[in-house]
Length: 287
Image (cartoon, rainbow, N blue to C red; front, top):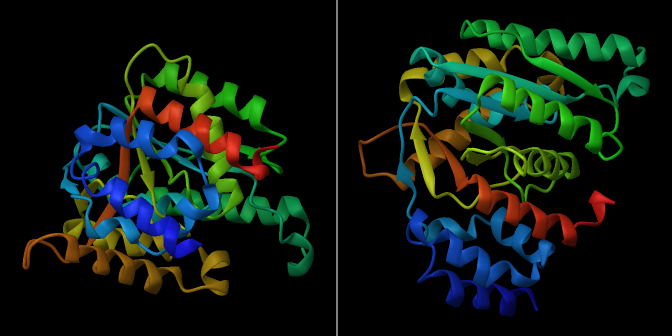
């Protein structure tokens, strides 16, 4: 069944996913009846990168850029290089942390508040590595329950800061909180009266990579940022793993063009809002 579905994806996507201009046709053709599990599986297998042309883009990524992170460290894993480049270009960059990050407090033998404060401090130290302002912490212990409140908060931040580029975990990421973050952003962007470029970044899964950013000049800063997250790195060596992933992505460009890259799935605001609506309808984690 999976093989048949992937063959159908291939026949549909080959003529469509060769550039950003064709993504509206992709959304209308493929996602009319979303099979979330199959699309997520194709993404996990990096199925799309063989025939999607990832277009190189450079900083700045907007006059006012916002990164949404479900948990402390997601922002650095997925787009720490982009953050460093944006700050280096002297354009505005902000991070909003949605979840409080305290779910594992009992197994660590500490209070939830102690764990939350510790993880928030790690994110502050990571931001300081590239001389950017500390993240905004919304502190929701349950993102599904917090969707209405978080949506209002993100909408207000976007409007107040005149955000024109948002980075968010890829909408088909296999972590439920990462998908729910997209549902929050989709709701917030539905009422924004200007175009916003939305970039899906990679954390626990791979994206449909239609844009790519060379991060050679800031890779050491990104690794220094990642090293700030002692709690996460005690469970998994994110510094090592993320460096390897960014190195692996350099294969999408010509030999010698780069050593490290971050990949993203970019959509304009209206197409993104529609995509999120379809995925959310098919996602049992959203209810």
